[in-house]
Amino acid sequence: MKKEQTSLDFRTTVLSIMKHLRKKEDELLLQYGLTHFHAMYIRNLFIHGQLTMSELTRIIGVDKANTTRVVHDLIDREIVAKLDGERKFKLELTALGRQVAHDFKANLDKFMEKVYIDFSPEEKEQMQNLMNKLMLGVKKAMEE
Image (cartoon, rainbow, N blue to C red; front, side, top):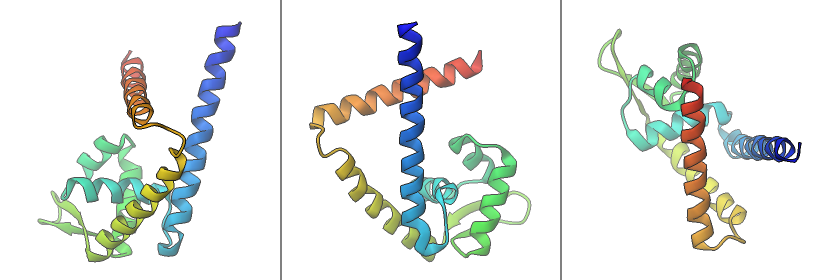
């Protein structure tokens, strides 16, 4: 019983952390009328440059319909632009999109510095390694 309680508490803690991080992302993007749903796409286009919709879908790990909806919204807001034809095209951030991504990253980095204020550099690295290991475990479990 104790082990099950610990697992439930860990899951609840992770979900709570994610809820608070999404809320902060929403707060940081409010000035642009965007939300954390948009942030995933903007962040990945900022990091990777040009990507197709299927590449974005795979990287983010969402369904195709969600990607289509969010990308079209970002195109309508002139944050993302389509390149290379109508059927098979790549996406990239516009100048406005790059500015949004830059501002968002800078503000999120400042916030995360506050989050990690009581962590040593070694603890921060260990936390990242453990979270990566947890993600791999989740992916493997999902494949079974």
